[in-house]
Image 1 (tube, rainbow, N blue to C red):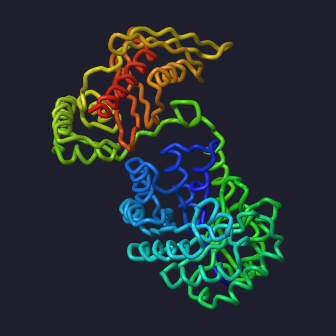
Image 2 (image 1 turned 120 degrees about the horizontal axis):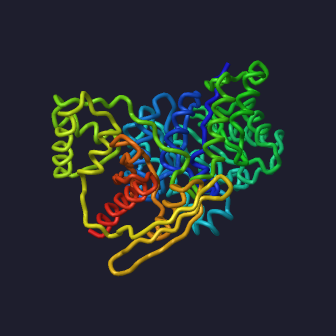
Length: 471
């Protein structure tokens, strides 16, 4: 019985769907879920912003231990190098070369003739194979391609070093019987396909994607691209269920843990459907404290530096020295220093900059019968800027107002509120961590008012980002 590889394309396809904008943390969480679920490969989007996207791919590479991590490349050597440098630490890396093969897409979308496209494909695959042991060539719109050209492209891709050939029914207009015949004829006409893995990707335009995938598997397909969240392609949930129940009929199984499938799909759906990434600084929540970080006054500067890096910070030598000095003062008075204390130390000691934005005033309206609103006034030089926003709570509304004034959304990586004194007039300390261009910036605010400390912490982090951008 053959083992069919399931390549999950949820994250790669979500990158092109406006309503499915996933945050950095959501992508990491989804990757962990899919890796544990047992999918053969996890496909993510390629690099558009070199610094931020390289960090994202490197972070995913460090998390994914069992599945193949697959990333698409553009058909030029510079982008291939950029992607590979970010991906090469993955346990099982794969590069993806995706190209159109139908006349309409080649000439009218990419403005290339068939022969030029063929040479570009061969070059890209050869360059990828120099770096990675696994290369997936995706023939986009294969079912609408000229038959002779499609077979020529597939043969050339295999010669260039592709280890997986994926043909796409991008139009989704085939019935299962038609798709089975399409696969049969390809295998007959291109004998070299027996030396590589033949993969498929089916659109669900006629609601036949799952049926076409099964038809392809029966004809000998070795890999199917599917999504955990509904996206008009093959459903990982339905496909896995069919193969689990009809393994004998299909003569095929998968590595997907079907007993955990329902729970994993529910978690992925929650991430995709939360919608908070579109309008809230809080995304879908904040990160839990890293309980593995425990430092004492006996730890040296290098140990502190490694823990600071583990929290996501990329500090200069001067900032590391300032953080270690502050750490020693705190550690001398405490039995141990954990991740939350270390975050506060970094926020107060590292990258202290002149204030571009200064809080002038804030007015918050909140209650159980009204939506929370925040009226924030911030001074920037000689100009006083004001914004009023509605949010899911007073802090959410306040941070949205600051974003509106700054004219920029930054992903909120973490949000912590701690008490630093006791009693009714206790001082509250807030630490905010923002991500900009793949780098983490932390801000710290102290006030008897939690909302006030949160606003000050956010502005403190914002000032650090603005200072680095301007300098």
